[in-house]
Image (cartoon, rainbow, N blue to C red; front, side, top):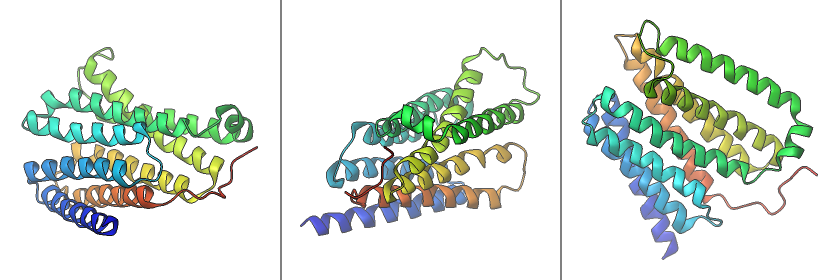
Length: 238
């Protein structure tokens, strides 16, 4: 019975992922958003039903990512209206994911062992965030204290913090699940960053394909992460 349930979830996720990819590439906004929101919600249900060790922060992150897509539908894809709200829900989702990783780390031991890596990643992240904001808000008369600017900046901070922290988490644990979590973060970060050229290019076909590929790949690894059992022999720093 359990195997049948796993197979059913697998095919539902596969069909929704295919619908999302087609909707995004063909610019069918409602199909894309509905498929993505439903797919992420199915992932959340799948996680709480089949994961060997459930954590409210990981499941909550998936739930907030689903809400982000629902808000796009609610505001009828009007970027000016939904951008701040979707940024906030996505920030909450990424914050829960970051907190989830932190819950598996001993920060003092991590920094002590990988202080140079931590410093390097922090500098690179700050540099990328500064340049991202310069590109996104180039020529726009917008206050740095406005909710739109702050939410966009915090959103970018969360994305890069997640990728950096997941890499340090992989160095710390050095096991399959931490590696999968790092790969997930890389694909999501690439998918977010690749949206920036959308602001400047008329022909977006290649970018839309790459964005779709990164997101589908990211959620494929989420599936692997959920279904991969904890290795009792995993290495942790002492």
